[in-house]
Image 1: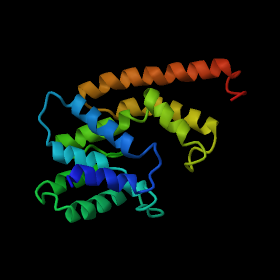
Image 2: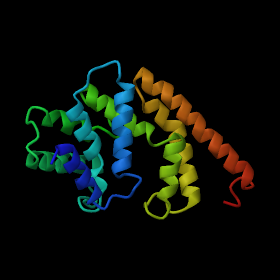
Image 3: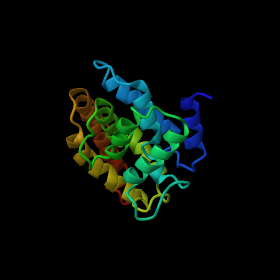
Image 4: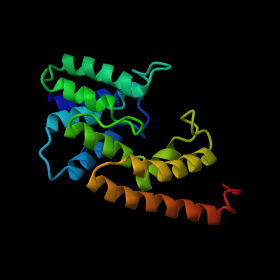
Length: 196
């Protein structure tokens, strides 16, 4: 079996919530390729990092009180070694996985930079809103619709400033506008969130 198919099966069997599962990983991978189309990235590195960047939060692999990016790095190291992934490329994947979060500095490779950009961008705009609302009651930080609204507002304000590439910044502006239009509409239609 191709290593790409094996990674898909690993994520599918991990108990991942759909907001973080295979489709999120595919969006991150394809968006990273789109944003970096002017460069030549190592596709195996980018694919492996995109598929494994959130494994540390999946029920099969998560550890309580361990940052999911660090846990994902450890899980990715073990899984990729079992799959006989190139030992020369493995450190690049692990750096990208460890540094994919908005609160981290970008990793050292172009693959790490674009993985991080794409993951950030998947957290706001229309797709980010869909993900947030799918997590209501499933995530300790998003127990109510009001929590999802607050988080959407926070993401719209903070995440565009975390994006560093020109292509990423252009898309961040559009996704921020999508989020703000949604929030304004919900506010109008719910008596300023009272009827949410």
